[in-house]
Image 1: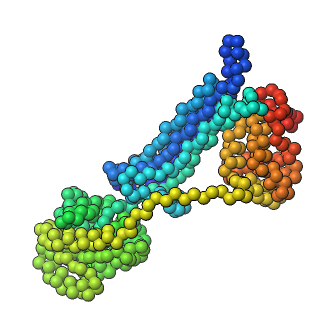
Image 2: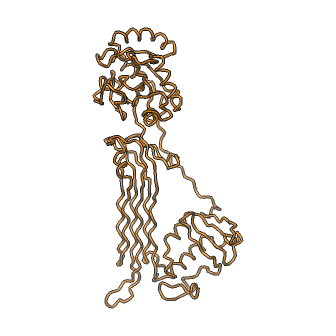
Length: 455
């Protein structure tokens, strides 16, 4: 049974907004006391929050479907519906949020960092809020908007200062256990480590974290072994330590060859070329390993690498290695750019920006005009098309926004197809340019619009 998961596909749905209420106040001696329908409540958001006590995405592997609660509908007597509860999902530090196509939406680093991945829908206005001097008793209310929904990919990239890389059974887990309080699983067979282990190390006044990455083998960058699955955990580290088994007796294996193989896999993965490296020749407590370490030290130093002969079993050389890692971490922290102050960029809308666009599409059945824009699409979603007065109100709003004039300029004729909105959210109309503003001046029964009679 899996205990560590670092990549999941999450299916999220924010809460829908509650519908507005259509109501007329009635009491003794006041049979028609005016509209008193309340507004619908806002739908709940789905938010990701970095929690320092969360280390894996396992919960979302078992339960990938998450939905916030919807807002309650409004009620009579000017009672607004309750807002839906926000859903807060706790994720580990270093979680990257992406679309299914690989577009990065957010990189969540630091405890308390949050990101709203699905916004709840707005509640619809009740008829009390829609009343005006000319429309004293609206016979309709606005519908609540549906909440956002869709799939997002959560990918965990461990936040650590130093990454230990090397072949399986090179002694990485033993090294972490020896220099920190971490207690990873240690055994004498390959691929003992199935998930990254983090340990906190103190060297003098420097405190840093070390990540033990599962062992790499040739072809790891192409998916062999466990390498590709966990190489992402090396990306955030500021330094790399090659842990090399100096006592291996496998044919074709020696410290220089092991180093070349691991470097080739890191290069194939990409993005790690500029990280400083040091080499830890492990298991020098074995006599033959001590001789081999002495033989290859000059060659490694000739490559510009600092070499530390160590033994995780006897703790020999660990103090020197810890201070060597601390030196790299201190240098990386000093060279890291200072965090920029939060900037609020104000982009006022252009004077000639109407907030929507009209696009003509030629289809086999004739021209089609597509109206896109935040306001028109939202107004259409909030309209109850079973209520003629609500449809007339929508026509008035679109006309005041300038949609009618824009359709005329685009060449639309009576009977042409007009789509407001994009994709599956779009609503198709047969355009009738005679529907113009002025519903407030035409008196009829509540819930009707005289302009729509006899359609």
